[in-house]
Length: 140
Image (cartoon, rainbow, N blue to C red):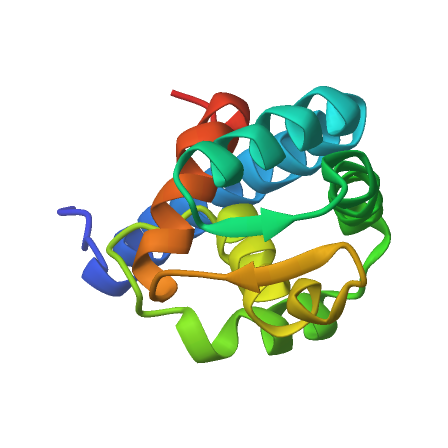
């Protein structure tokens, strides 16, 4: 007797496998962001200053703020994270969700920080500078 292959079943298996892989990558990135928050924050602030994205009176205060954001990502509710990155989700193909979150944080919240004098560049410029540092925690 011939065995009948259900194409939707194999498609569902493939989709499930992709979803599992993405979830593993996501957990890995969140764990690395927490573990390396201080180093990443320092490198991130330095890159933002070098690329003339931000002007700040105290890079240390900005680094501490970035470190708190990176360390607190794994404790955030999924809804809050998705809500934060929603306005810029389509900024680039295959975006790093942590880079999107930090980009949106810079654009929306960090601009009001007392140590920030100004933020320059458009959303994509900020994302590229942020992602150039945070790509270190993205699995290959």
